[in-house]
Image (cartoon, rainbow, N blue to C red):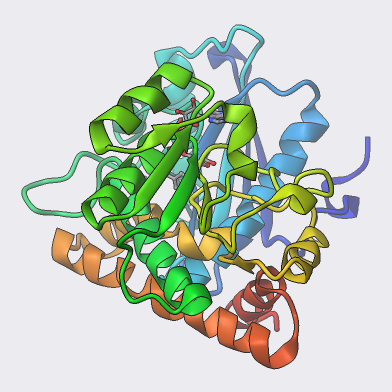
Length: 349
Ligand code: NAD
């Protein structure tokens, strides 16, 4: 097996920790990419991987992504990520969660955990019994914290508006046609903001009934999940899966703007060039979808109130515009520009 630091996704990570507790059934990895700006923050993923190598790659890649996201959100937080290697049945026991909390605690605050795929709000509460280095706890009166989805949706909405102003020269969303792929926590919240601001909506979800119901409620239309990328809309907002922009899909896109909440929308870095070559304005995913981590980080770092969180989220359009300005000045695609800006912010530029 290749050593983690020889893998292509190793990026001078500051720490790579493996935790095993056979009695509790725990095998976990905590990757700390950078603590340059503060404690490394990023959620815990509970996932059944086909092979351990895939878990290592995920931890390396996702922790670097958190460094970039936190830096571009203007947070005093570095980037880290934990993955718990679930068995095929995804068995999760109180002992496993307690052992994981001890693992997080042993790092003394260099890594702060939160929710990610496979980890519930209850799991986070349980983890908090074993370590204080955890965020995303239920909010106390008017405080930050809790479900990050609505904060992410708000940031994506503000980012969509900024992109529409930039690409279409429109100051408001009245009549602007937005196609949303995935109407879960983020996409559904985004659809509500957009409907309230007069946008025209086309919605799709793998769960077609869910998309149809929301479209009926908000006065939009719904299409098959397979058709959403090719809708003749002004904006395509990917809010479901990663890696949806690739050499098959990019030539078929009809929108002028891509601005959505899904992580890792570009299948590979060069697809940023392909999107740009089509004349489509792209909002780098980790810049536009930072609302949730802003909520989680400010809860942990400051015990901030809701108004402070919303004020920080309202900075997302400025950060997007800074990326687009540099993209226009240099000719580099926005995703590449965002990476470069983030690397500078974490002292690696
Ligand atoms: P969610 O599970 O609540 O919603 C995802 C929705 O996408 C579901 O309704 C699902 O049925 C649908 N979907 C799945 N595959 C689809 C497909 N092929 N076509 C159409 N629809 C499909 O998840 P979420 O929290 O809304 O997150 C959505 C995306 O945003 C994910 O990529 C996530 O990583 C990213 N994200 C979420 C947050 C957050 O705060 N929740 C923060 C940052 C990034």
